[in-house]
Length: 224
Image 1 (tube, rainbow, N blue to C red):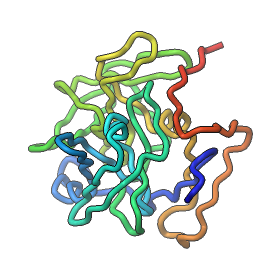
Image 2 (cartoon, rainbow, N blue to C red; image 1 turned 180 degrees about the horizontal axis):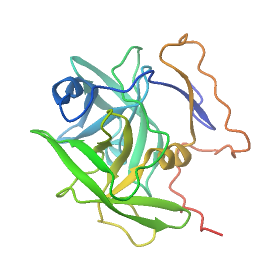
Image 3 (cartoon, rainbow, N blue to C red; image 1 turned 90 degrees about the horizontal axis):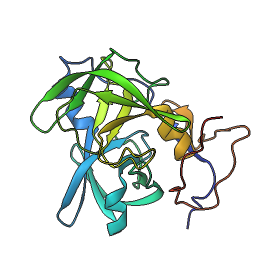
């Protein structure tokens, strides 16, 4: 069985998706759905090799089914962060539709797009809230749900919504978790892009500590 402890190198998507908001129809095949029993949530694939981000609540139910476009497969949660309410899932196979992760978090006033079930919603970042050493985004989206991606005009994934952040007394407040924060908390390194050889999945985090378990529900460190 694969060893999921320590840093996970993940091959990144090569290119951003369609321009938004006009490219909504072309965006839909890139947005996944994770289901388990009677539960369903949005799943966002961030690598052509089947790495997906989805709510951690589904991981508690065991194996989930993730559907992206016309493809479906069973996925296993290999890393969870219960304090953020999100988990990293692994699907088998390659060449999955995926989204490029933005390298930076959007600033206050930036426009973001959220692919709801029936429409592409447009919203703005209305503020930034700190908890320990992390910063989260507040938007004016009406009742966003955990797992909902927040994209920029080039379809890059800038943040994912969580309504169950348990840091700093923020439980129940829908917040955008910036992509860099997710990578840090789940200890993911983005390796070469999907234009590279599938076997070239290498990444080095430098001085990052290796976490001994796949569960990272420890509290966030306080800012110095």
